[in-house]
Image 1 (tube, one colour):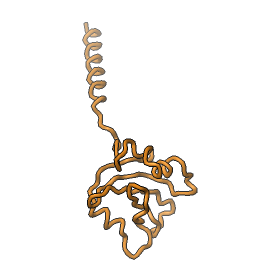
Image 2 (cartoon, rainbow, N blue to C red):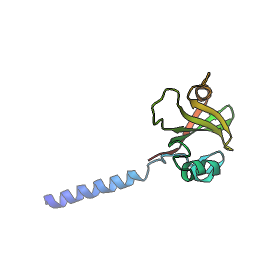
Image 3 (cartoon, rainbow, N blue to C red):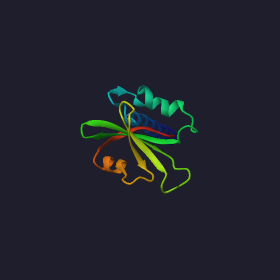
Image 4 (cartoon, rainbow, N blue to C red):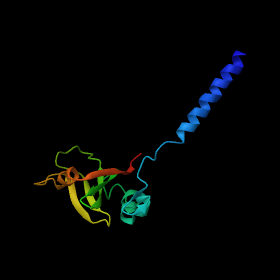
Length: 129
């Protein structure tokens, strides 16, 4: 009798676990800049993430979407291997891939921080696993 009860409890637990795991939200944004799967379908971004070697571009850590005024902007953050205080740690682009601002580094005014602080965070597009 204990064996049957234990099997029933285990069965119910497995059923509950599998039921709730299907309700999990997507980890990353499904659309940005008017396209689905932006990490793959925005050509310039896909190039940066999947086609350019780490030698040509610092290692990208994450890609985030913001709304600045009425436009979506994309912030790409990369790893600072050398932990230098004046090394840039990312940049901001518009949806067409036009470079807008450098983040960090030695610059008189950190325009990136100013823009990000005035922007609404929408969500993460991509993150290094």
